[in-house]
Length: 421
Image (cartoon, rainbow, N blue to C red; front, side, top):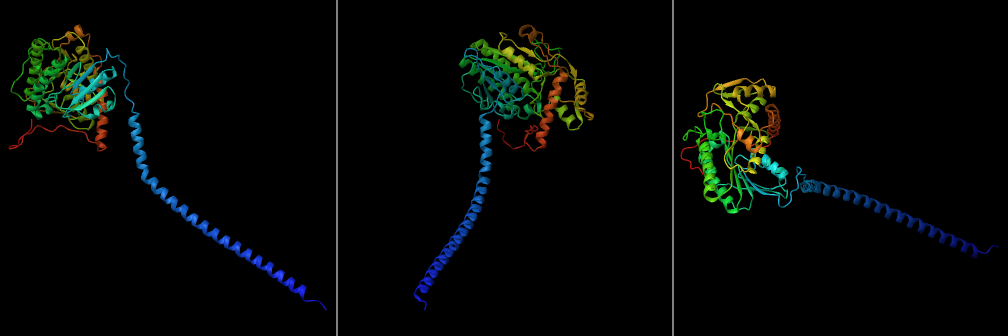
């Protein structure tokens, strides 16, 4: 008879092993379950983190672009500037330096290595004309009206401040007179105070509608003192008088440039002058408007030639007035036909009534500039016109892209309205 004791012990041992196995299986199942939950939670967390990261990226993307723009501004590349030693480098003030001629003069003097301060009230000048120098250590731009006194230390003053096209200077004739008289007095006072040399940008308009042809510097002129152009013509004539009064009484060094018709890039699109009018009309397919029969003559110089003449005159010993212009004379009708041809325009030429006091002939005698300054224009007319046409095309593209291009307003005075002059 078999004893039951060993059998019971065997069954008990098997039960214990089964329990351990079941416990192990349960433990593995529990661990697997926990791990699965952990993986699922981690996946959800990763998705959440990804969404947060995406939102953060969307928020900081514009900031990254702004930082890139700032980096570009700090690493702005300026046109090449010549290095001048302290004794050769001059501190130069240009009034009206953001205008057409003034901005080109700024470019030359900056690239020559001088320290340039531009003063402009932006009536006809534009910051765009000099923005490529903003931030340069040798350049400073001041929003200021020369009718108010200016206190600054300089060695040379190029006094160009004044509206120069008929629509602009006729828009506010009293302001034009103030700029050319009080503004010139302020600049002469500054020149006296700091011992600077002053160059006045005068004009061929001091000759009026001339009875002498070509016009030399000894001709006194033929000006209507009460006509619509008188605010500019007589303003410049009295500015010349002031210069020589300060030279004789106070010993101020002065230079006077009588500037004839000039054209080139940065001309105001709607300034009402012959070249800008014809180019704009030809590019837009509009009739080219000729005032009068078109037999009036003009002589146009390219702006770079004028700038070279201004610098040569400033640094010369010539204190009497000097004509700066191109003696190559053309009729207004010839200009219209030439610009039509260069633009490739099919525009018609439209003849309108002649403007009051419009000079019939204009041609400079530049023998004095040739003899004493060694200066004469070198840019051919067609070459200069092609550059101006290219510039105007670009300006029209800006306009088409809804970018603001300032336009001078027509002269008007409303009854009962007080105007600030």
